[in-house]
Amino acid sequence: MTFTKVTEPWNHWLVRDFLTEEDFAKVKEYSYSLPAYTGDTYCDRVTEGVLFDMLQSKLFDLCAEIGYNTTGKGKYFAMEFMTMEPDYVYKKVHTDNPAKGLTFILGVSDEGTGTKLYSDKTTYHSTTEWAQNGGTMFNPSTNTSWHCFDAIGCSEIRRTLQLFIVNKLDY
Image (cartoon, rainbow, N blue to C red):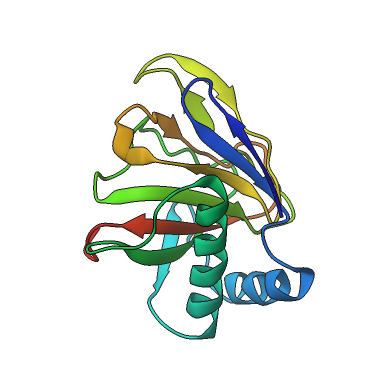
C-alpha cells in the first residue's frame, strides 16, 4: 500500500494498492454480485462478516499510518458498496454527513471516474485519478471537503467501496 497526502484544495490522501491482490479479488467478486439500478445509484451497507472484519483492519492500519486516531468512545467502522450506471451524475456538490470522521472511496471496477474536488460549494478544483484498489481518503468533518462524483464517459458500471470511520452508527 502507498499513499500521498495532498493539501489542495483541502487535505486528502491518494491511496494505491490498498489491499493484496487476493483480498481485492474478494471485494471485487462481492461488488460484482450486487444489482445495478438503471439511471441511479445503488448502495449496499455491509455490517458484519469476513469482508467487514478484513476491511476494518486494513482501514485501521492505514489510519495509523497517517496519524488518524480510530480508538475511543464513539468511533465506529462502517462500509458500503456503491454501483453507478454509466453517465450517471450525482448533481450535488456536498460535504459528507458530520457523523463521518473519515471517508475513503476505493475504486473497484476496472473503469471509473475519480472524485471531483471543489474549493468551496461552487468552485471546481480538480478530479482525482481513478485507481482500482486505490482511491481518495479525506476527513469530511472539517466542513471544507466539498466534492461530488459521476460516471460520465464510463462504458461499464462504476463500482466503489466506501469505508468510513463514523461517530454514530446511524450516519
